[in-house]
Length: 483
Image (cartoon, rainbow, N blue to C red; front, side, top):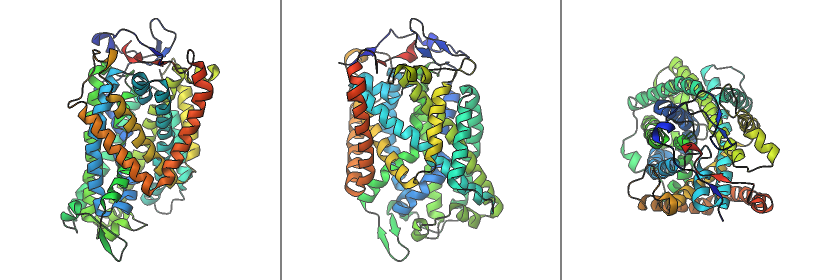
């Protein structure tokens, strides 16, 4: 039986009250976050977490290796699928505004055990994605300053450590800092798009009739390969859902959360997909995209000169730092919410639930996210990429299933943003993601098995610790953001 704490909805005006310091909720001893973000701040932070330029320059080159000239098409299909995912997140994020994000939404609608497994999948992504992005810093610093002795894992670890320190400070200040970085990464992406489109060497037909090449033979890209590539493409566009984690810190969340999610997806997809198309058309041929040592900065230098290439590389490095900061902020909120919902032994809950009186941030949870992320910079990147793709696809699928139940029972009459074409949209998302996971199981089963094995371990924690303590542990608060 699901144990969920529910309270009457607050008025829209009370939702909009900003507080510069941490407070405690009225009538409860649970810690509360400061409600200090407007729409612009929420979009800046959310778009920075999608980190479109770092996705473009760190993740997309890996997609070129398998998708060839079909990389833009694969990203576009993923973008369409993400629209349905965004609808699901927008409805559930305003129906259940909680820093717990997916696990609070799923746990409230599907039950405590579903919420716990969702929390685990979101945590997998939370701990793995930042170091994947951070590791790319060294490569681009070396490209910007040739001869600079930069080690990828060490540079990534330094970025993660710096991002962790930044994550402890005031959220509103971080929104403007990340906004400045965001401008730099968008400029870099725009410059690459301009150069690619003004140096086209391939016809536009390769975008809709994609081919892959091993350097000697070119072949049409199979549909099954596109299906497998969708997992990584979803990872590249992942981050637009960050607004639901900030729902307790956003003013007027019932209006702002959905706008932040949808605006971020549109802007972020454009920053990723348009330059990808430009790179595809500006490359010497399909084999240039799929070669193992594909050098994007070298391509930019060939289109322009070394100074422009160095500038783009420095902007990319800034984008990576920006991404790490925002991801640490987002992921610390998940861990904070899990402690508030008593997922751990009491001493751990008290520590992770600690909110800084000065900055209004969950500083212990921030450190708990940043330290493992720093260590993971030394793990194999390919393994991290594969596991994350599976985790993200599984997470989106579970949220879409929860969205199918969002208009039943007591939640049916509750005020929230409501998606169009319900229940067709979440049903199509479920079917599409199930197909992606099936294709991954058929062609790349090791990533799926690693993720399932870790999820089984989380299931054992549920069976032996959380389930026997149903009245005192993992008590999901369905509406902390409405108080």
